[in-house]
Image 1 (tube, helix red, strand yellow):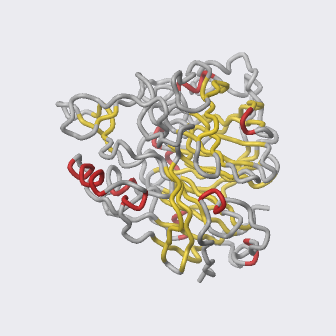
Image 2 (tube, rainbow, N blue to C red):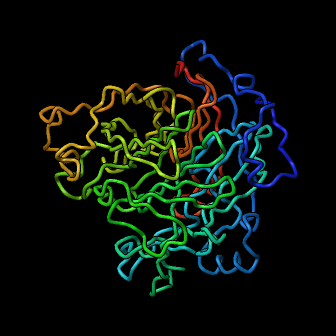
Length: 440
């Protein structure tokens, strides 16, 4: 059983996220050596008990209306779209854009997303683990420069249409401030970095959840946003597949280098040239000054073949859902598809930086007819270090990843607030896994 850590009480959200110099190191709590038999195993797990969304700051009236709009349960919040271990020993999880599922047109075809609680804003949840129970300590809503919630609604025409309910025939207004947050990492001074799956974009947050700056592709300045926006990212990323933008972020321990990876290859998944593509792009950024980030690199990773996954399906079903920095230019990558989650050590040190390549602004790399070797492009080298089925984990929608020691990781699921893909009323969970091999 993992040791419980007493929460820090009576402090503001900002102080709760600040560094603490007198707290135990992870090495004193979690295994530092891999399993003796070389097989990964779950050493503990915990679940979030039924928790009303009112705990996030929404009124009973708002929650009642959300039920009317089709939210089938209001007590299964999804807190695991990203995960990090805080200096004080507690964890920080992050939600995505909130309760949502497909909106269907008269023919039964998806034509947008339902947001039964459209006021919902992405939220960070500080929690501790007490035995088999996740115990929230604080909820920190993401806000704009004026302190207003940013919501999770889509930003602009051309993105998924937002509707309030299945019965709605008129979409909700777009919200230029909205983000579908995924993954989170922490700077040494307590500020945070998260990524957005929709735009796609990167955001720097204060410890109290205020958006300090949002980085977007060059053609998406998000005019009118209620916080600073800098459109510095390569514009090719506007070609991301719908709702398949950034879903992972890693930060070096000194807080100077960040990596963000696309969830899926770019290119129309129905087009012959791209439907079987396995090429995933990762950006490297200099965030020495987080408010004035610079893109310094762009690299390619070759994802697994869908035939490596037990549920079969299409190559487009494969997703990268989080990464965690190991050391140098090595990241631990969480890759998933139906029936399986795999972790790979991706080494970027010998991969080609394609940021200034003549084909960077096109989808040449993703085209399955392209020979990357002929372009003198090397992808990252990969090493498989974990398969969820080997550890007895049956949930395949794991999205949060944290390295606790060189031999122990934590994983969290996205339970979709009990709607959408969640057909079993599964709660938010965290798994502690001792690996069969060391990451360092």
